[in-house]
Image (cartoon, rainbow, N blue to C red; front, side, top):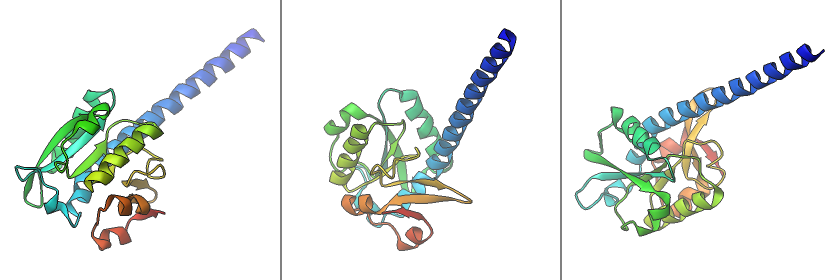
Length: 186
C-alpha cells in the first residue's frame, strides 16, 4: 500500500513538471514568433515617419522589470531577420520598467514587453505608450485583454491580435488591410 502511494505521488509530481516544461516551451515559442512579427507591425504604422528618433532611426524599446538578459535575447530575435524598417535603421534600447517615466518624449517608435508584468506594470506601459502615440506589444497570453495594444493570436493560424480600444486611445493608426486579417479584441 505504501509503495503504491509513493508511485502515485511520483507520477503526479512528474506530471506537474512535464506540464510546466510544456508551458515554458510554449511561452518561448510565442516570444520567438512575436519578435519576428513586432517589427512588421511597426512598419505598418501609418505615422511611423513621425516617430523616428533624432537621428532618423526606428527606435524600439524592450521593457523588462528584472531580467535584462531576456531583453537582450529579444533584441537578438528582433534583429535576426530585420535590420531596417521603411528604409530606416532599427535601434533597440533596454528599458527597465521603473525608469520608463524618465524617458525622453518622442524618441520611440514602439515598445515590446519582455517579461510577464502585473496589472499596475501593464498600466504604466500603456500610459507611456498613449502619451507617446506608439504601439505597445506583448507576446504573453492575456495581455491584450488587459489593455496592451498588440500581440499574437495562436489558433489554426498565427495572426496579429489587437485591442481596438487601446489602439484608438494610443492614437496609433495601422494599415486597414492588416486589421482585416487580424484578430480583434473590443
